[in-house]
Image (tube, rainbow, N blue to C red):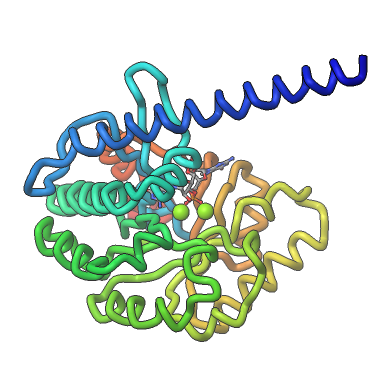
Length: 296
Ligand code: C2E
Ligand code: MG
Ligand code: MG
Ligand code: MG
């Protein structure tokens, strides 16, 4: 009887494994195809299954601080796939260079079009994976994307999570310095969730620190939560960095983060990641700080 049950559960375990690996195999083939269909020989982004959503970042006066470009993929048969799933798949399958290149060019292309149309987007933030930034030719890809689209380097910010550079500071430092020489900005993404090492902070040339949204899931009346956010914000400012709070969902969180000194805010309270066609309307409504607009 026991033997039977063990055999049975092993069978289920194997079925699950097979299902998971079958899905990954199917997804990797489809992702490869989607990326190929999307990128012309010249590397110009075209309309296709992979798109970008843009999530607004709001500054202290209510105007736009910037937009974060977030990749979206809808497979015709399998539906919408979460970035958490297809980004790691792309890394594993050697497709991250292609995906990253597409995202960078499309974000610069869209950003340049908005700037040319007088849309006050602030800056443009693009997520970059560790494998991507350390791949040979990455800096050249960035400078080429800026040149080809006319997007201003100073308005481009690359976001990296700790896993992208931790323990590899000496390897990434020259890459970061080359990017800084172009005028591009660098942000630490999801701060406070990684390995919580801080020795890299003064070693690498950061511009911005993004406080992870997990801090905001603590109750707002928890005094330790505010103490922690305030300490991170002070430390970041002491290092000359701008601070963005991620995952702001309520007015109370916004009020607390303002009081704690954050420079900018991003979250569902202001906007979900939006399709490109909705950005112009969103920005128009945010162009002038409310107080100033009312007094003139
Ligand atoms: P991230 O860079 O930290 O992006 C923020 C994520 O938080 C986004 O999830 C966004 O939709 C979500 N978010 C924003 N505001 C709120 C909020 O108020 N509440 C909650 N619960 N969530 C909020 P998304 O788009 O699913 O992306 C997940 C992650 O996938 C990103 O985290 C980023 O690490 C990665 N990713 C997305 N696009 C790219 C890309 O083009 N390249 C690379 N390398 N990674 C990407
Ligand atoms: Mg502003
Ligand atoms: Mg990010
Ligand atoms: Mg983040």
